[in-house]
Length: 258
Ligand SMILES: NC(=O)c1ccc[n+]([C@@H]2O[C@H](COP(=O)([O-])OP(=O)(O)OC[C@H]3O[C@@H](n4cnc5c(N)ncnc54)[C@H](O)[C@@H]3O)[C@@H](O)[C@H]2O)c1
Image (cartoon, rainbow, N blue to C red; front, side, top):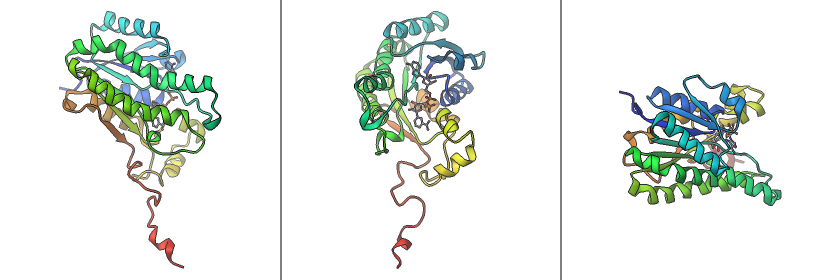
């Protein structure tokens, strides 16, 4: 029997490419999926089998209504995937308003929704939360401050949630994807996935970008009872990005030769 059979999963940011990859895998693994996003047009493109709900995750009243709506329609909530994010970031020159807006979506909304969903996840008996961090959480990237800081904070928030929700039987973990085929990479590369793979090759041991469903498979594992003794952990889904040093993939010693 698929690992998520009978479970109900809520995925924020479900209207985007990575969101769809995660949703596809969760459904293949047996879950009923609710997608929540602020992007109405993106939600409308989801498969009819997905319960798509418009929601601004920075509004607590909308989060309350979202969780209540999931329970009303599906009767339970077992899995929460906090995937929605904002790339609002102007590096050192970011205004206070933009700092607060970026952290509000990426960090505070993750904390608020998880707390609002907590009674239902506890009732599940095997509640699982998967937060989205990133390789950006642990390396310096030029011109970016808000997003990497928010993703670093997600790793720590995950540990804190894992500790305080353990008594409710809720496990909390995060994933840190490397460069993944997504709306932003599609846009910047002009839709050329092979070109994007070539650019990513030197940063990732596996020599290419990740695919949304490759991230989805790790999310599904962490959401399932197969990960019953995994909590407070951050899982790299990055093709070896985090383990690769500045020498990258080519032998560096030969560069010493005169
Ligand atoms: N793209 C990558 O290569 C990459 C790498 C590492 C980690 N990630 C992480 O993966 C996740 C998805 O990234 P992506 O590149 O697909 O992002 P994206 O910007 O394409 O999608 C983010 C989604 O969040 C939704 N969203 C934004 N604000 C919202 C709000 N207030 N309420 C509800 N929904 C809101 C957007 O509408 C969108 O559908 C993010 O958490 C990101 O940090 C992405």
